[in-house]
Amino acid sequence: MLVEVLRQHYRNLWGEPSRTAHFTIMSKETDILKWDAEINPEGVCLYATAGVSEYPLAEYDPTHRLEFFTGLLPAQDAIARPLAMLALSPVIRGTHLAANHTVTFPEPLWGDTDMHGFLVRGPKAEIVPPLALDNVHIEFLQAIPVFPSEVAFKSKHGADALIRAWQEANVPYWDPNRSPHPA
Image (tube, rainbow, N blue to C red; front, top):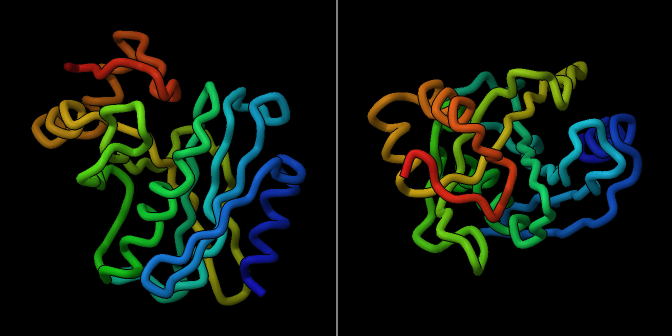
């Protein structure tokens, strides 16, 4: 089964996850797996989807599949449901989702934040190597929580400009308690 091969791929990278949450949204399913910051080389808590690659996606070759991950420090386990919603949204809606897209939600990603969406990126460093199987190729995209002002900035200037603005201002985009930049 594809999900078990995927889970083994993750275990080979980071060992056993410390938590697993299962989500069913409009009859589509995925798990969100969590690894603590102390056991992975990224130094953040990693959250990754496991199950989205079971579904072919609109506007992709049927053998090309996606999974998503995010890194946060400190941990923010409430990210699990929005990450599942992000990952399953192209499956449920039949829409295209790729690197540099943003996906926003009407409600905050978790209770004490004003972040309402994700910037989807192909990671610059290979945090999760692609997984090539006989009949499926899985690409892993990074989901970065973003504020509405950051989505607006990205819409006007592009995703690379937003990343540059964060780098120039030393914005720790992995910090769930950070302030928006640019505001």
